[in-house]
Image (cartoon, rainbow, N blue to C red; front, top):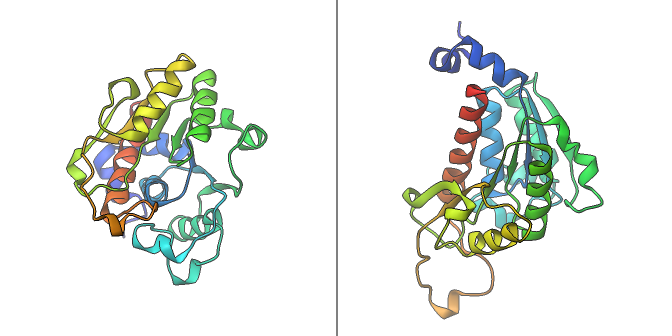
Length: 231
């Protein structure tokens, strides 16, 4: 009978499987991208996972967020994620942080205890804070740019933030990071030009579709997993 990791072990080998089991990854932001990202890490065998998000699940999340189902509505995303992920792997070590990332709350994350950090936050200030902290401590970090207002999953790229283009969020992040001496941070961005929408459909809410955050989160998870395996 196959065990939980048998098929993954057949692909990457016993040694790589053990490296993933011993690895600790922090995922900050558990929305469309972050939820899919975190679940891919769990299913691949990462042994310790930190989860940080201050939001609760709302009905508007259900079109794209893997944590959003009828019975999780109103729950903190960290709690919904913890329940889901422990139902996948009961041996997973989980650390829940149901708060907004700020200068004040940053120490509670104990960033130094992680081997890798995934930034899936939608707040630029918090992204800068997390990336700076990771960089100062020499911890690998990868940052997600926007997956909204786009429809073509083949246009996602992982590159240094200094090499990004087209994406408005990447442009802002690139400028802010450059001002603090950082330009070589890996990010996932899309080079797709957003489709034009009828003015009546534009309400200030970011438009989205189910598969785009899932693809973005999976690509980031793949990058993290391959880096951990190589390490």
